Length: 194
Image (cartoon, rainbow, N blue to C red):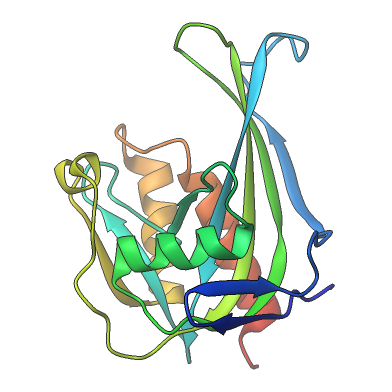
């Protein structure tokens, strides 16, 4: 695994590796997609892996009844690392993000139900990092608040079990739960000390 070494200098983030090539963790195509040549756009996002023993920093979303890694879209002109730090701060109140290391890329092709495009190519760049233990107040967006999203430290095994139950039994599950559950299982198999 190639690691991205990053450090924090005042307000500027220095991404030493410039353009890291991440290993591909998984590539998925939604079963409703019949034509991969349909009009599509790419959305790049980051996902943070913050561990404390077997506890992991997650977001619980009441609307979808699931746990997911903190993270979100990378703004235009923003580096992956800067996007990761910003999203962590906004969604969880995490600060003093450090020791950022590349974990891998999860790629998805999903249907898109808005004008101009039929498909979205979602690229989730996953990074392992450390943060200060104390979380500050999150700066959630209105739709995140309306969806009942909040940060939580959760036992990773319990989060996996919960998501699997939601996949099996819930009609309100979101499209991202398959990705999130796959990533949580991979984190257990690769990062937790046996």
